[in-house]
Amino acid sequence: MTDPAVRLDPAVSLAGVTFRGPVFTASGCAAAGRELAPYLDLGTLGGVVTKSVMRAPRAGRPTPRMAETASGMLNSIGLQGPGIEAFLAGDLPWLAERGIAAVVSIAGHSAQEYGELARRLRGAPGLAMLEVNISCPNVESRGQVFACSAAGAADVMAAVRREIDVPVFAKLSPDVTDIVDIARSCVAAGADGLSVINTLLGVAIDTRTLRPVLSAVTGGLSGPAIKPVALRCVWQVHAALPTVPILGMGGIRSGLDALEFLLAGASAVSVGTAIFADPGAPARVQCELLTALAARGFGAVAEAVGVAHGLTAPREVVAYGDEL
Amino acid sequence: MTAAQVAATVMDVRRKGDYVALRLAAPRIAAGARPGQFAALAVGGSDSPMLLRRCFSLAGWDAGGIEVVLAVTGRGTAWLARRRPGDVLDVVGPLGQPFRLPERPQTCVLVGGGYGAAPLVPLAAALRAAGCPVRMALGAAGASRLMAVAAAEQIADTVTVTTDDGSAGRRGRVSDVLPDMLTGVGTVYACGPMAMLAAVARLAAGAGMPSQVAVEESMACGVGVCMTCVLPVIGDDGRTRMTRSCLDGPVFPGDRVRFEAVGTVPADAVGAP
Image (tube, rainbow over all chains, first blue to last red; front, side, top):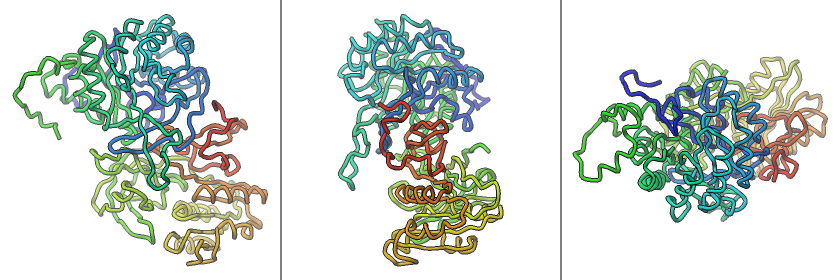
């Protein structure tokens, strides 16, 4: 999978845990990994970030749940999933048996429910890290989006932190006035790192029916359309909290997209919506990223993290041959 | 046979009435294909602003390639219709659950609506090869929206055509002619719009025979990870779940699909709010 000419160590360390590579699947875009197995070797990736699991089974929103937009898509899945019990019985063991690092995304209606999910996951084989989804826009009430309030986000992170000792990342929403404020609050409450960003809330209208395309009216916007917003968020959070590891995501579909996230301050990246276009995308992006890093003289993934912050002065343009 | 992602060269692009048929060199997909399965085609190239795959029933295949038939309904299908022989497409397939063939030879009725007739041609061929007499009913809004009638006439024992406007065959809907076709039938198969599938499933159930319906739900990925193509389906345990039509379908037993609740989450579905 990896170009043999690339002599770069692909491993990355996030909050003390070493992962095989810098590219992960993004939550909600890879189920729990199994469905993608025909298209790529999941074991070469940093890991699989699972679709957010909740306490109980959840049917999600009515269809239509999806609208394609320019270089993006809206989704209003509404956290459909099997619930923690079925997840622990089937999905997580599948990853563990194959030695694939599992980053389990959890979502709940209250800080207490997040805490309970963390408790249920404590000691689960294969669990490498938790990603706490406090920012899913597809909930019945926007008041439930904990990541829109520094206090609400902190409550959830503290509840999770108390229950588990694997690294815990908070997944942040870009739909806030000051993402750094939320990021600081999460870290103060015990988050080891930050996943930046979740989708942006959007709407699409069908001009034939004169109605919203999505049955839920609003949905989460993802895909290359949001990449500059995601990079801005990573940039701001890294500038404010340079020692806090960031899992960067939002519109990545090539190795050079991923490299931008590293240069902006992400320690690793997740590939999400690109999977829908190309089920092998995470492995392809990782291969392209490692090649691009080696071409630029980096000896390890970590050497590239945040580099763009130190290079604000004009710099000679170098052609690496991979720009197209 | 697991699905594969392949670079498939376009061999032929042909207009068929209101539809466009694409033949693609994809031997790996063809080798595993079964009637009712589909392929997911990326559109617009690697920097495309159109991120989602377009999914189409396999209308036919041989050792070298597959055929899909599409209706131009938007930018993605328009882009596909503009492909020329020699162009290369990113194709994933074969995907989804195929039609199940009867264990013993029995008379089968195949009902197609519009380009939903596409997967019925390979199904009819497979049924005939298994010794099953085949009756087909093909319907559409008008003559230009009928498809596969000539192919059906070569394979099936009888073919009945209906159009809403009477421009070909009998005026009316396939569900109007279906009751007269059900005498002595073992299984009814259908592919087409949801309303037609609902009518076929209801008529088959009323006549006491099983049906298998291939649904067309809007898909983003085709491989089971996006969760957009769900519809309420009753499981073996009698409980309704929001079920992915790409992985668990597109073919379902007609009596398992909650047609009346498509587009909603029924209150008794597992995990309903």
